[in-house]
Structure formats: structure tokens, C-alpha cells
Image (cartoon, rainbow, N blue to C red):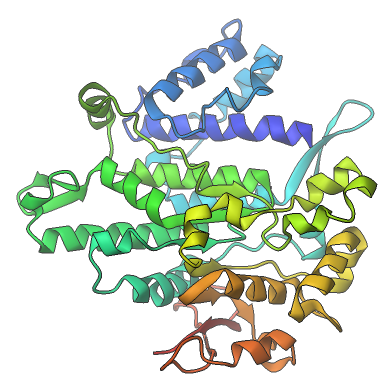
Length: 436
């Protein structure tokens, strides 16, 4: 809705700056100083525009966001909201809140929309797809780590940074970005370890010493890795922005005001990359061919809901190389009967387009598996969280995945993921993988 579309960008911007304050990148109280003063919204917009000069990233790009600058928001309302980000109302130290925890918080709100009622009251409602799926389920970090290790980890093992730069990893239902962050974190750790082991003095543009024998990746190198390797797609525009926010905060880990200002002065380079070419909004399962016979009869609401996505236009370089090297994630679980209640056009498309949906009942995660396999190159790996039922049911896609992916490999297999001691949760999640 328009209400949600207006609220989310500013929430992301305010939280980003608040985290930067506690990390020492921004002056503490930058937003707090606006509270109680006249023209709070105008002053807040000035802070956002100044942030764009320092960070880039697209988060503060008002050439793209033409709606929020023209809003009129009551000073008291906005002051009350900003005060919730500071003590005593806020008990949080933002500098120590992990990005994964922030993603878990965001995940709960991604399943909701804000709607204005006829009486001009704001009402928070669950999205139909979330309601039918039984709510939003965040992926535990240990599962993310396991899948990343068994996909991205295997693909980059023993490779140089130059070789890794040619690889592309996707989460095509990225949600709050847990898998994108997990994959990116793994890549950062690998690159740092590689440079340290291969004479860091030879790589001054990639690493720098913070004390004898201890190194960190430069911001430029962190940006290069992110833009080269990490990709994501989600049908929810809010999820796309949350994933971008999480990745940008990851880039800023270890940075301070001095390092940010040095980049601006010496290199005339703003601190963050623009992720618009990497993290995109669209329906991973539905291509532009959907509209060929239906465009004239569709309502605008249907077009927005379907949100067809052209993979070759979105990621031309990756697709020209044969596809992605790994597809990782936690696809949605929705039975076709439930899906048909609010998305009958999509169900009919799946039936015509995908073998796994061609007959009988199925769950949408099976279609995600089939689409994922089609997006991989010949050496690609797929790592999803799937229920045990996938390996017992006679889905058509099971027959196609039973064949070897490439010469010398075993058929698709699975193994249960056991949660670490002390963590609560289900124990029947399974990770499909291609064993060595």
C-alpha cells in the first residue's frame, strides 16, 4: 500500500543513521536533536540528503524516491517516533546489535502492510500470502551457516580472489537478507584469510593493518566483493530494501568517522555501493511471458501483485555466463489450494510453465526448486531448506533432480540438520545438497 511504501524508506533511513551514531560513524544525537523543534520533517529530510553525500548506496536517493519528500508529517508525531530510538525509551545499544538480529526483527514486519481505513485510521494487517503460510518464519543462523558452507564454501575453496570474482550467488526469495548476509560474511572471511596468508603487504588496496599482525579488509574491497558476488530477488519491495540495508550495514562494520572521511577526501568516493543492480524486486517464478495473453484483461492490482521478472534483463552478465553458481535460501511454503484463493492467475501460470506444478497438488517451494535448478550454470549448487516430505512425495521435479548434476557426482541427496544444543526449534528441516 501507499502508506507502507512511505513509511518503510524513512524507517530504514532513520535506523541506519541511528546505528551509525552508536558505531561512532555519525555524531551521537543527530536525530535526537530534531525532537521538539519546529519543522521536524523538513530538518529530517536535510539530514537524509546530507547522508546521501557521504554514503551513496541508494538508501537516500531522492531522485528515485519522489514521494516521501513531499509528505507532510506532524511535528509531535515525528518527534515521538524519533524519541523511541534513544534512551530512556529505547534500551538498545545499536552498535552491538548483530545484523542477523536486526534481520530477524525486520522479518516479523515484512509480513504486514499498513492500510488507511475509511475513518483515516492506520491499520496493520497481515499480507494474504503470509496469513496462508501460517506467518513469517525466520531462518536460524546456524542453518544459514550450514547451507552457505556447503554451497558457497565448496565453490570457493582453494580459489584466488580473482577467480572468486567471476562467481555469482543468488537468493531468489531473499526476505530480510539472512542468506545474502550469510554468504557475504563467508566471502569476507575467506578473502581476509587469503590476503593474510599471501603477504598482505602486496595487497595494500585490499587489506590494511590495525596493529602488527592483525588486518582488516578495506572498504573498497568489501564493496568489490559485494557487487561481484551477491545477488538477491524478492517480490516484496520492502524485503528488497531491508536486504540492501542489512548488506550496507555489513559493509560499514569496523568503519568509523575517520575512515569514512578519508575516503571522501582522498578518493572522492562515498562509503557505500549502490545495490540496485544486485538486489532487485520481482517475482522469481513468473517471467514477462505471463503478460502476453493477459495484459489487456488484468487490473493494475493484479499486475502489481504478480510483478513479473525477467532474469536475463535483470542480470545480463550472470545469465550470459550460463547462470548462477549457487542458489541458496529458504523458499516460502504455501500449498496450491491456499495459493489459488488469492493468486489464481499465478497458479495457472505455474501449471503451464513448470513440470512440478503440471498436475496434482503441490507446495510452492517445489516450484522454487525447479526454477532454482534452471537458473544455475552447469557446475552450480542449490542449497534450500525443505521439509522431509519433498524427499518422500512423488513430485515430478524429484525425478529430474535424481539425475547427477554433472559427471562424477552423486544424485541429489539430503541430510537432516540438527540444531545446536540449547536452541529451541524444529528438528525436521533437511538440507538438499550435491555430495562430493
